[in-house]
Amino acid sequence: MKIVVVGTGYVGLVSGVCLSKFGSSVVCVDNKETKVALLKNGEVPFFEPGLAEMMRNNYAEGRLTFSTQFGAALEGADVCFLCVGTPSNEDGTADLSYVEAVAREIGRTIKEYKLVVTKSTVPVGTSEKVRSWIAEEQNARGTNVPFDIASNPEFLREGTAVTDFLKPDRVVIGTDTLQATEIMRGVYSFLPPEKLQFMDIFSSEMTKYAANTMLATRISFMNEIANLCERVGADVEKVRAGIGMDQRIGMEFLRAGCGYGGSCFPKDVRALREFAKQVGCESDLFAAVEAVNDRQKQVLFQKIVSHFGNVQDKTIGIWGLSFKPKTSDVREAPAQTLICELLKQGARVQAHDPKAIADTREILGDMKGLLYVDHQYDAVNGADALVLLTEWDIYKQPDFARVKSLLKEAVMFDGRNLYSLAEMQRHGFAYYSIGRPGLPPRRDK
Image (spheres, rainbow, N blue to C red):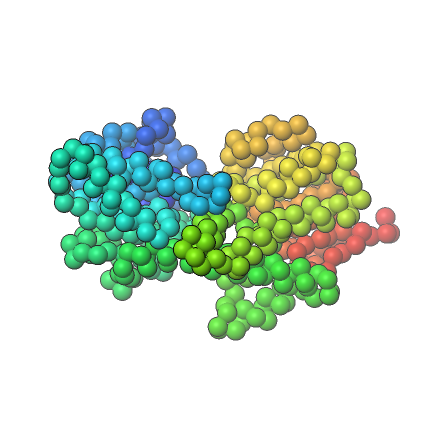
């Protein structure tokens, strides 16, 4: 089977690389020549565990190729996956301009039957738009080449994307013809048949938004509970265990923290909120999930200000810039909100991350007062406090004695509840986390 994947971001590249592992001929297409050259050289433009090695192996064995020539890549292909970006417009709706551009190019290019599969996260009804855009371009050139449309939303978690693709909980596929259904069975023939969930296209498109918004809702719900816990002296970690053991609820996505970020949850919640408005079903819940998350990203800054009184001329060390561990993705990461607030109030920031410094610098630039450091302890050296924002493995068991000796004061703010209260008390830190009792500064110094 010949497969074309349009777009080499997280979704497109992971999908293309993994599909080529099982013998299909896969061409990953991108209109950025520099990016394609990078991929041909065996370099992945973002960090994703296990992806680079698999990509190089499949490329070396000839099953995987990269191209900027969409028309040539499409010749002889059975399936074309659309994996282009759908960023948020200013009003929160999904920007479908990249999807439309590719669909119209397909309409101008195809010479024989194709199955066109939308893998990008798109609002309900987008597949029908893709169908109409392809048909419009065919009509304009006086052709009527047959094609089918399918929806195959991705459920890849950054940091575990390769495993998620190869060993998924399920694969959601929306089709409306028998031929499209059988082709998609062939694409995913490396999986047990029971993993494939076939449904109509509208339901497939809705499933993606529903899943991400449900997970985001659980996070925002738990952050609201955490804020209540702090007010009354409860411990959110104990509350999480108490409700998570209920089989109807479960433990996943019930961790309190400093807010969610990344490429999916923020834009998908906004897009579903706006889509609901457009179809006359405005949702207070979707808006509240987003509002809670925006507010939660300010919590650590408020704790820092409460501790110091003000942060003018304070130096704050930061561990973690990516929105989650095992990825270099910093889109809408809580770290950016905190850094900007600190700098605005006259503080200095020393920031470390094992993978995401380059991506953060691309978004924030070299702001005055912001120093990126290569070693985690350089972020602590001479700082007035340390803030943990991403639970990377290298931060889980630090040398607390060294951290304490490098700080001006033994003060830590933990946005991920990574450390136990007993441990931090034993080491003599003033310690502030999310939804748990704070440890005040020791007065015996």
